[in-house]
Length: 303
Image (cartoon, rainbow, N blue to C red; front, side):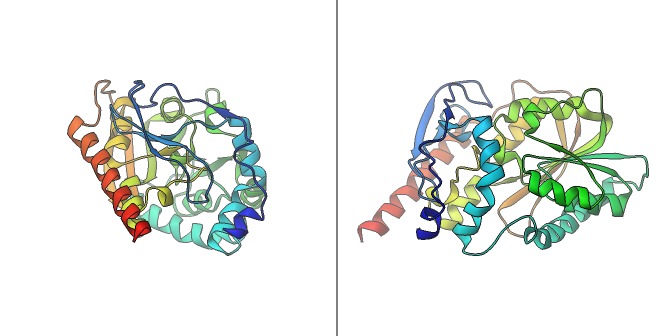
């Protein structure tokens, strides 16, 4: 795509880390499933043959991602879609999303002027502000994009710049932690969920949603179109729920978003189930389905 080429972003030259162990099960039985992403970058993608977690390998380093989000992320997404998507234009979509997620959680939230909220990857703060206005929460937004945090501060929210894996909130605790359309962007889901537990109050709530990888590649009938360098991980219902169970989160409510791509989970703290993994049958079905989609795409190209 010419618009992407015009950005002159060189994925090949970015410093990268090798993933030597699966972030979910710890095994190293990796199966390569794709050679490039939707932007045309040579992003190698693997599935864990043990638990079915899908991830980029190698993937950009934390420092490279920080620079990517500061300089290249929004221009790249804009070039892909052929329209401007930045810290200003994204807010209308975020307001709609905020209302939908608030309705999803409303029956579990009580108005409380002393309650605190942490929005991880909270972008412009639109979601955190909506929760603050509707439920009385005091909001804090963490995001790697300083431009988007400027918008959050304009809305009167406290902010922190950086990646959550590297953030330190000390003894600070929150009544509600949001991980909205962000978990796919993380470098370490296991570490992040441990940190969420540490900063969540005993009776607090944790919200997370995923782009369902199966829904994405079935919608496009393409594995490559479901892959993008800004998503180190690709989660399914089975892998996300295994992460939650293993890290000690009980699912209170689960739902499909109106776009039919995202799956939402509202959770509370519970006893970890360390031996909970996706079943071998579900992993086998995933890998077989990936091959079916790839072969169907190949036939279309040949024809």
